[in-house]
Length: 596
Image: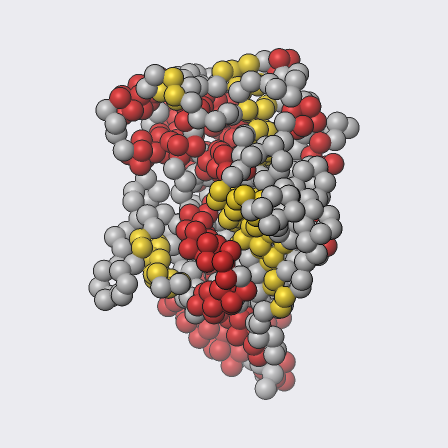
């Protein structure tokens, strides 16, 4: 967790008295490079290595313009200088935001040096059961910020300013915001002792397992959360919370571990939701300029959630500043803008990113009758000054017609004072069905490329998956296109053609091809296990028999690493086959294949 300093607010240079406290969530025992995560296995490994967690305190200079870390939980929570700098600046609103009181927001930064070991095995176990949108990040950190700014005459610049930041590779925004809302107020009063006690409690939390409901005690409160599974139906509510335990105090039940209030986030852009959905689907570069980090980060997270259950394969930064280490990379004019969704609050970005094709500027929510005032669609050429009015500045023309019925239902809900969670459910279902209608034809065509099961024989290499031919797919849309499940009219063919050039098609295709290849391997293993291996061995040379042993062992390793979808009985039979085959070989070969 990060606590950020006193006195002035970060402007275009570090503020006077700027302090940063970084505490790693002790409950997230595996903490390399500033991670806050649940990981019993890694925690135990570190303790075996004598790396027990404890608090260190580094005093921050409150009179000089500097950025420093004050607290680290646990002590092995290490960051590079670049990561420290990024986290420090991103944990404060910039000077244009005017955030008084308490506010929460989030950011996302790139890990220096890419993916870090030793997380791979544990990630694989969790990710195999988690929805793609909730899998652990292999090369990025999320930062969840609780910022306080209040007038204080004892401070040099007249304000008390401090942030507590929780860092994780898990995108559990609702859970971590709820956790910070409990911890931060106490921390601002009691400082280090408070964090030490909290981290001790969090250290006892159970590991997150997809599909399970967890009770997480902290500071006299029990947070009850359901960790979604990839087999959950996304349009349904999470399973009923556990009630069989006599928990005292009664748990605070979070309805979602990650979902935002979509309707509130999209209030000013409801008339352009489908255009924004298309921009997200195509992986287009987009800047979101908002009045505060809270609005910026929520809008960006809401936008990338539009594609669920499709994985968002592009980069995104819920809150981004000119101090970020990727600032030059994202603002250069020597190459096309990267496929990134940037959330910013500094109007300076309007000039710096003027060459980006899509800029969404939102203001403070204002009501216009019953409907929140909507931003207008404007040409990028009108984006010239720092005081540019709210609007979606883009030359993009949507391929699909606007769903006027949806807007009427949402407006009617406002007029009838319908609860916002109901409005959010309506909007989320619309976006889910839109994404599913787009993806289902792709899934059906991809499934047709899979070899027939009857073509898989035990003693031959499995047949190859046929190549994806875009023209064949587009021809199939005439009788098996999105019109079967979606009433929206428009240029679906044009949308698919642009989708083929996007990072999301590449990400989707690679993942589906990988899953199909694993399925082929699993079917091949089952075919071998159902065959009569003793009959096969009668006329085979020792080289062929040894080759079979090595291939079976390779498949077993893949299956035990959750990479092959096979039954436990198949694995047991495969192990028995290996023992049978090895037992038929000469003693010297047995010694090589099964060393003592």
